[in-house]
Image 1: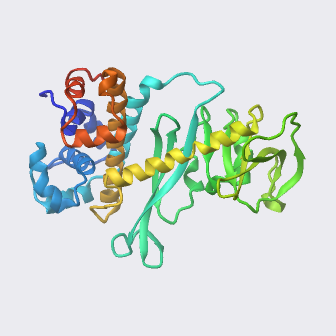
Image 2: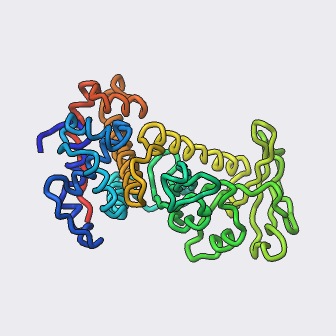
Image 3: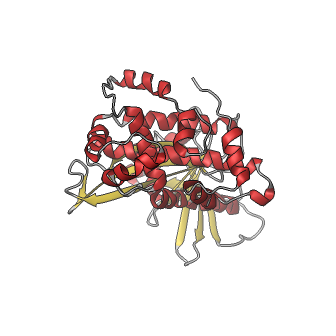
Length: 372
């Protein structure tokens, strides 16, 4: 492959066609097309996310300019309906493993923070009749975990928009990291399970304001609380059938608007101020959701079938993982005067206007290790 700094050419270096073939065989999909293959669809969806094309018709007009095999919009739509979205989910997992490999290590305490949450993409009922929410709306959910401070995507799964977040939590968590989550994940029986499993899942999770504290005991503290902290205690959570079996630590503070924030955790060696600081890292997943929706076309669904919808979204997330890897690698390699923010890198890369030092790096110095 000719060296180039285009997204499609870098993707072909990272995930060549031969890597896709065994996955297709495992999924039982036989690609008989010659004019427009599954791999061509993969490159199209990647570029469509990166360049924020408006749909299949818009992509039909644009794709030839980005070195892709030109076909009409009906061919794009038909192919997207046929190809199982599990392929793109698997490719995303490959990209995550590849791009996060450089930071893998044996983790002890203090552990990294794993922030978990979901985001909803909604459209009119007529667009996705297989995914009703309520009223005249339909939509899907992405359930995501990211590694805080590094902004790295960890795990992703999908459901229709009316599925409760807790039902997908088991697919996202990781006992080698501290789970940080909002009230949707605050079910007391889950806390017991986290605390009782062989490799304990440590967590900091916000509780609902009306949570009942059973037999609360304040923790001994020699110094007064600082900042917005008001209480630090241990108790069982809930009542009656919802009562937790174990006692957990509860830290109560106030947000900037004066509203109570009640945090449950099984971390007993950190100060309450540290617990509050850990929870504040949760905002990073909100930034992530906002970025993929604004920059990778996630709310603009091209197709109407599960394969078309989820295939598009998983490919967009794959593009995010690749961009984040390129950005981190490049910023570590270029001179201080050439360093960029992620937003600057994304914009200049999409416009093919990166500084010379960045273009040289992307053309000559990228190193992607092979994975099995």
